[in-house]
Image: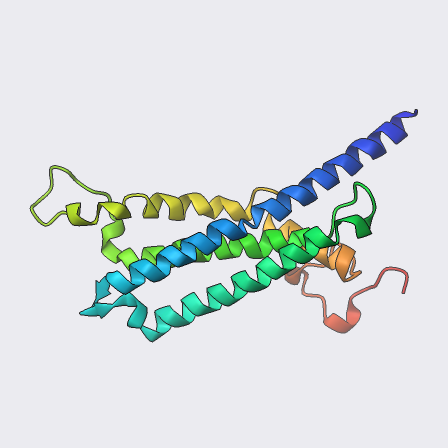
Length: 193
């Protein structure tokens, strides 16, 4: 076996593993549970004298996130069901879509939680005044979770790289086309077309 053959096998295995990792990064179950928690908390926590869930702008964001999550879940099921169609060891290019949307939904859910708790996201000061947020100690992990979830759009291949993979492997566009290159749509070169 030549070095080129070994390298081809290693690269193929790496692509396969990354494709599976991206499918898992979607974390549909975690997002479903987080949305359930958001609905429950938004029904209990008040802002302006009424539950947060009654705010039309908040409800619109929450509903949009739930719809996107349902679409992501169906896409994930399709990717898993089509696993054998792409050949042994070849990743499904749709795993990039799962990674992008999954990471965006995870970040949106933490943003919604932050919106619910508002100023209670500030760290608790045990030596502070009598108006501390002791009664809302459940908020302690929401801000750290919000900040920690910023990384989801980077690991497993940044979302920008995943968009490039989709452009190349799904849409058949050249990989070097980027929005910032200021190339008119009708001047985009196509591969062998």
